[in-house]
Amino acid sequence: MQENTPVATANPIVNALTEMYGPMATLDNVKALLKALVAASKTFEAVEKGRTNPHLKNKYSDLGDVLDATKEALLENGLIIVQDPISFPDGEAKMVVRSRLIHEDGAMLMNEVGLPLAANANAQSVGSAITYGRRYGLKALLGVQDSDDDAQGASRRPAQAGAAS
Image (cartoon, rainbow, N blue to C red; front, side):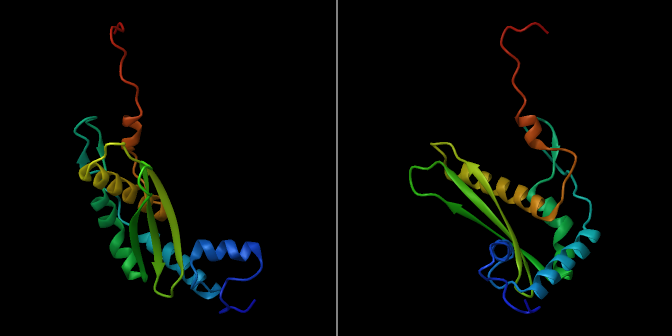
């Protein structure tokens, strides 16, 4: 295969790469995307845990904190993040947030975060779910983390009523 040949072929491995890196991917621009991501990753700032969960009282980084720590390095390396929610047909209480890291040459990396929604979800709860999906999708796509995982606190079981302390 030539260096600038589009990655789509009859080869299933190459087709998987096309799906992963996008329809405009060539070997050259996939290499450029990965090189740019490595360069950007080296200069990402520490993600500040600037928010406190009012219910669990733990510290966490919100979407703005993650963007503040990464956006400048991404742009300096020809990378941009595009995120969009995808809703399912009526009756399905779930949605997906798709995150794409796109290089100026056209190649991209993508992930999707599935989100359950309450059957009686209102606009505010849907917006919160989208923001949650964007934050975790972005952190996963860029390999960014912080030591305080607000999902850990949410998964704790409440103390049983009447249990001895």
